Length: 145
Image (cartoon, rainbow, N blue to C red; front, side):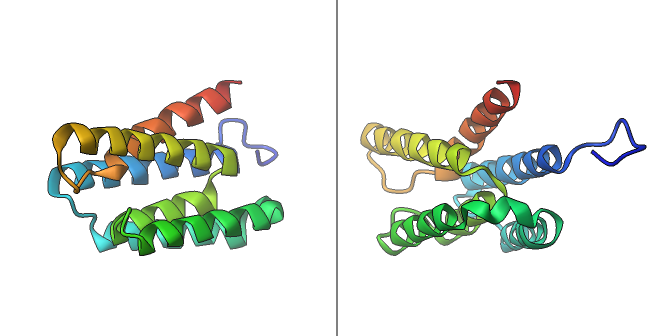
């Protein structure tokens, strides 16, 4: 918190709130249209890079973890498990999130998507529709603990 401003958000709180807004809107778009608007995903990527590089560069101390998770996302994208919009939103979410929150949210969302694909017998499951509320829940739990 900046000295002299008692009611301002900390950098980590601002990142969590803005990430939640972007992921919830993307999750709704993914559920409604099975498509995520490029304006949304690219603006979230710009926001994430801004926070990651300029505002809070000390958060990059776990860069090897982030790089390995980026590699995981690339593999999931290349296998066709996640779409291009999902990839961009998840990448932006990874850049500003704690690695543990991101990984737990991604694993649970993928599990829900697999179960749902077996139940609905379709290949087009809106992954971000699962990821957004899971990320919200895990973020709240981590901030309260």
